[in-house]
Image (spheres, rainbow, N blue to C red):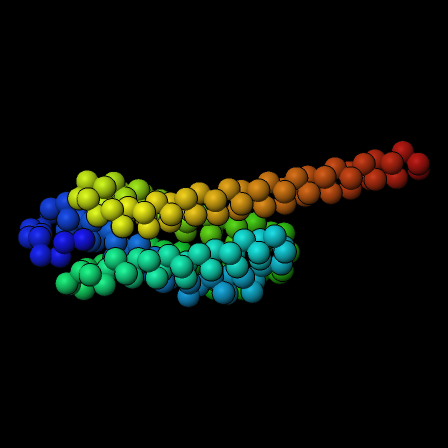
Length: 183
């Protein structure tokens, strides 16, 4: 990225820099907050997905820090909403009993966190393309792909948990019905 380019306020390069800083802050926040959510989860598949997400945030944090390290000014903002979402969820969910309900809530919180990065990532990638920051385009494209894969995996866990609950509930109702019929 050419750092000597004039970046007047409100220019495309200036918007790109803000988006890059926001994504870098988001990956750091995810990397800091995911361990508590991993510890709170009980479903083995969800734990595996969150562990993979933790590894990916570490990788993307490095790539995004490489981008922002070339920027000659500090960040003007960070992803406060993401920090609030994950921090509040961590505190609230700590009082819930381990099990399916807490796992569903954790999966939904992480999906929400992942979704918060999508518009920023897409706009940053489009601006990087327009500004011809080719290396940045590649890093942002990988981030977007990983977001999609993580979301897909989280959706599968949620569907599986809901299906298992539906099946357990139907089985319970059938047993009750059989017991009532036997009387």
